Image (tube, rainbow, N blue to C red):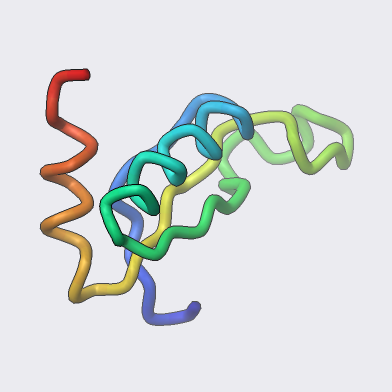
Length: 71
């Protein structure tokens, strides 16, 4: 996972899971990860706060295009 790249940032864990669901449905492997921006805001709760959407470098361009498509 160290070489994966951030393609988007979701405002919450449910939004991150939704975005990853869209990517997975298009064949792109994805992982949501809690960002460290605003650290301490959730008092240790892992579901509170912004989540990065991570994909492999080879899927990054496709993932960005998929996430920018209108619903």
